[in-house]
Amino acid sequence: MLRSAVREGTAFGVRAKEIMDRGELVSDEIMGGVVEERLRADDTHNRGYILDGFPRTVGQAEMLGRITRANPLDLVLDLVVPTDVVLERLAARRVCVDCATNYSVDAPPRYGWVCDNCGGEVVQRADDTPDAIRKRLDLYERETAPLIAWYRDRDLLVAVDGLGTADEVTQRLAAAIDERRQQ
Ligand SMILES: [Zn+2]
Image 1 (tube, rainbow, N blue to C red):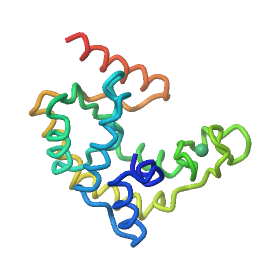
Image 2 (cartoon, rainbow, N blue to C red):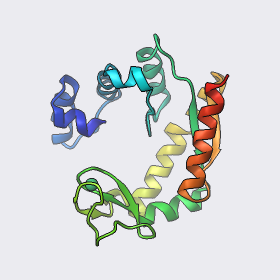
Image 3 (cartoon, helix red, strand yellow):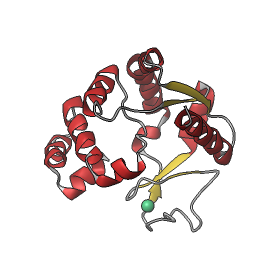
């Protein structure tokens, strides 16, 4: 979402680009602006939407609550995977530099390390090294794990078992969403 806001040159995309070009992290405020801009588009009203990997902090969750006040979230999914499996998956992960499609050494693109979707180069992310992964997991425990209790308190959280094949996990996620829509 951030990358496409930068590419399209939206108001917050331009501000985000300035910050990223300086090698700094985009603040919650700017990230919130990018999300708000995107959620204004018609497709989110007609079909609904899924935010993947956002919010990552309680501060961002509070901001998202303000952004979506008129049309609140239906459901928050917590994909539960043991740490050792997370480490294996990240070590095996490869990503398209152009469209960010994920692959892995076990599920590579069809032709060499060239993206099936866009023909971009598929590489290991610079931050998927063991050291960087450990730092991200520490950050997750400190900043993101508190969201589990935060959303549980608001009766939005459903935990989904993230072990198994991609199809199995997808079915569990779809079932959790269907169940909530019937309530
Ligand atoms: Zn691609």
